[in-house]
Amino acid sequence: MTKEEIMQPKDINAEMEILSAIMAKNEAILDIVGIINYSDFYNGSNQLIYKTMEELYKEDIPIDPITISNKLTQEKL
Image (cartoon, rainbow, N blue to C red; front, side, top):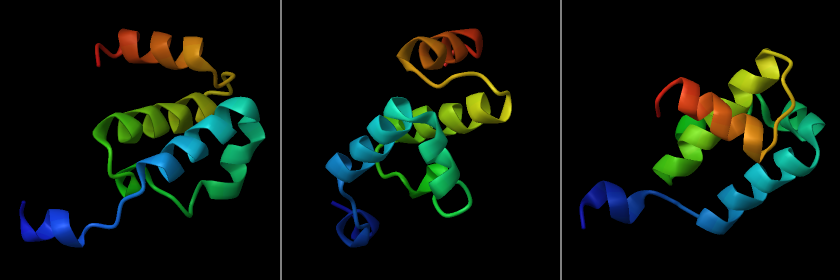
């Protein structure tokens, strides 16, 4: 384990709670955009999902598992 891994605070459950809250109520993203950046997520998959959620929000597309999956497929990620 590297020094960065030891010092990096992480809470995968908290990350998943944030993503779930946004999917349950898309407007929740307004409360965290500008405060949390995708790079603040420790888990790489959660980083990608949050970044995709931000993009969907900017494009005025509803944020749900299907639109996230479609966006990721379109971008071949």
